[in-house]
Every structure is written in C-alpha cells, then in structure tokens.
Amino acid sequence: PGGMLFPAPRDPAWLSKAGTHDAQLILERFRLLGLVVAKCILDGRLVDIQLHPLFWRAAFKSSPFALRSLREVDPELYGSMMRLRQTEKQDLAGLCVDFTLPGRPDIELKPGGADIMLTADNLDEYIHAVVEMSLVTAIAPQVQAFCSAFKELLPLEACSIWSERELASIIVGASVRDDACWTTEHL
Image (cartoon, rainbow, N blue to C red; front, side):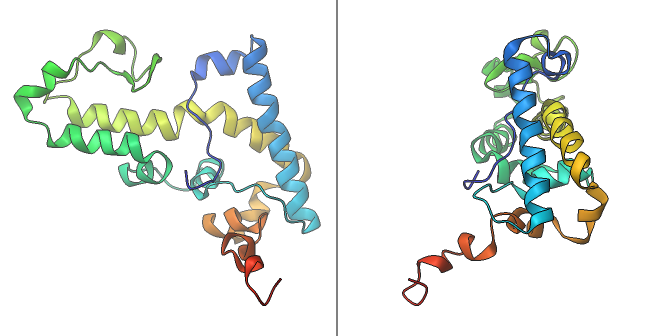
C-alpha cells in the first residue's frame, strides 16, 4: 500500500506451525527485517524500507484496527466491503459469499466459515471478521517474528516515544519520502 510494507494475510495456523519450508522462509524474512530495522534505528542509518504505520500499530498492539484502517492497507478489499454494505439486503445471499477471507479461501473467518453464507443478518459480523483477519489474526505470526528479532537488539518500548507515522519514516528518512533529495538545490 503506497509503496509501504505490510504483511500479506496468511493462514495463521500454517505459519505458526512453521512446518513447511515456505512458512519457515516467510517467518525468517520477518525476523531478518526486525533485526535490520532495529539495527538501523540504533545506528541512525537510513535504508529504503518503508514499513506501513499500521505495521507499527500491529507490532505495538497499541490500538484496535477499524474498517478505515483496511482502506489504508488494502483499498480494493475496503472497496469491496463498502460495496457489500450498499448492496440490497435481498441480493446479498445471491452473491454466494462465504465466511472466508476474500481471495484466500484457505483462511476461514471463523470455524466452519466456508459453510456459512453471507446474509443481511451477518453482514456486520462478516465485515468485522474480514478487518480482524486481514489486519490482526492473519499477520500475527509475521509480526511476532519481526518483534522477537527486533527485541534482541532494541526493546520495542524504547520506540514508544515516536508515533506510528514517525517510526514509519525514521528508517527511510523524511526527505526521501518527500522527494526532497530530487530537488534542484539538492542535486
């Protein structure tokens, strides 16, 4: 989203077991990312890694995510949720939408979700479950891998002096994000 890093939702049970090579590889990459980011903060180094501010919110578990948070991370999914809200109640059942994460039929939003169809009565529950799964549950193993590696070099609490947006720009530098290094004066 906007060129910033935010983990793709994965089946949390599959990632937590880390039984397959692919799951181990994903978690190791987030561990490496945690080490690199902590080292950059400690050394005051700038690197071209833009972590989304909401990634930091997930790492700090500082506040809950809302539907508008989904708009920042996945505008297409957010748009789909808004269109569902605008759909006539009688037409929702005809959409054949079940309680799995859109585009990820392997990730059920609740136990037995593949067998539960969307209706007007459970629309709000469905939207809340999509937000929760996309921004919290399905990225929790990646965030945990990042945080555990980050804490090896720098306590996360030490970064609480900065806001999520400040942390997002601290390792990449504000001038790089604002294209200040491409001005005539800079060149």
